[in-house]
Length: 621
Ligand SMILES: Nc1ncnc2c1ncn2[C@@H]1O[C@H](COP(=O)(O)OP(=O)(O)OP(=O)(O)O)[C@@H](O)[C@H]1O
Image (cartoon, rainbow, N blue to C red):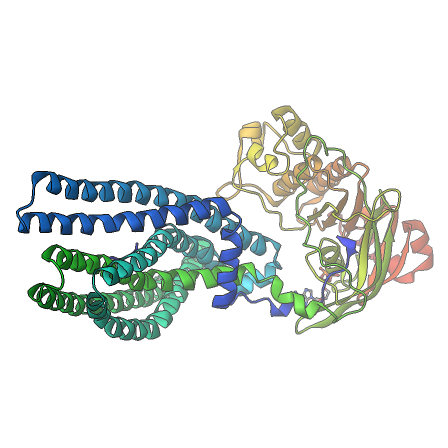
């Protein structure tokens, strides 16, 4: 029976408006196979040991039919007990060696397959983390989650089971064909009668199954996306009484996924049924040839028995190889989807090359939180040299143009300007989240030397708090930190340990399901900043959510944790501009002036007007 097998200049200059091309469509089969091979060949020794064990298993497997054939001849010819014992020794030796090598090859395959699949999942995950957030949203978080979970699982199952079964089957086919031909060429010819039926069946199946599996994966992704959306927006759904409609759309997506899965099962059942038919045709032909050859004394009864058993051994792996196409189709669909995710950032590379003026290397965006270690705990304030930067958004066009800004190491710059002037874009550009269409950014150390891997931290208005205890959240940035060090950082950042949402101190639960205020979340983000050795901090309205007293607490905490680091502060609250070393005034995507507050008040009427308006506004300061 057929078996179902189981930075930057090296500074930075980043590529430009090509971000629109990010689209994690599945990669081509060739690209996906290349990725798989690249990952697998990192384990050459285990891979070679695995192939050797499989070859030994195939060769040993032949001894069993040979032993049975010998036994048949001994019995038919009324031979001696000693001859029968010899035949049984051959049989038992074959069975034992085949069993031992099969178990060795299975465990070696897992040792190759699991790290390979884990490596692919990590590359895909890195790619998602490194991608522009808007691009991930466009791709659909449900789709991304399905690729990182269900597709990886499918791949993992197929890689551990399929690899062993496939190579084992291929080697067994070679061994059994060789054995048949050695017995008598007519046996080999009779066995080949099954081949046209198998080839036709495979062609029929491959044409139909690929699209069905691909559509099934897409339907699964849609169901995941709708479910995630429904959970995330549950309060809005309840408030608008959309429960029925939401249930109906999740149900419809689920039905569509179930229908496609059922179609896939029907297809594979028919596939295996046709393979069984081919098996009966081939085995029947071997029996007829055996009958004729034994009758004409061309071969012994034992040899005909061995030939029939060789054929079963031949047919079984052939069915396995063909049957594996079923698993391989599914795994292949999953692999191309995962490879598409891995390639989602690479998709921007061709557009980056040559499309702008002197863009140097293309660095990965810096981590939002710098993770220090004990040795590197000393943070070094960074300088930034921005020259002739322009930034465009898809469908919007250029929003920054000709921006020059030189920030000295340890300097504090406040960025001010009317709404839409480009302040956030500038902040996100320096943080590596937005790519320039031209110009360059160079990061330097205190001595003015280029820094290739700058540690930059961006704190935005919407601060993410990871679910868990406060200590766990802070240790994401500083895994080395003792409870005392975490406590000191939290207190410096104004986290009210022992009261309110933090009544349990570092053991307080934070993140989803808790009642943290936006200001609480911002204090936690500042504590993470205190623990990081980031040399450049970008604050984009980090205190804008807070009321007046809370805003003052945040500003005090911010001063405490910034220390001697370089800081760029997008300041809607002009009190932040007064304490900055210099104020960059932006208008229509350009920096029109950059001087200390007092000087700007005198030189720039627009800034003086902003300042007067802010001072005259009601005191939510
Ligand atoms: N993702 C985007 N896609 C298209 N246009 C965008 C995007 N983000 C910002 N813009 C546009 O770019 C321009 C600059 O926006 P930006 O947010 O940088 O300005 P800002 O000075 O920070 O404004 P605000 O003070 O209102 O936050 C605006 O016209 C804005 O509409």
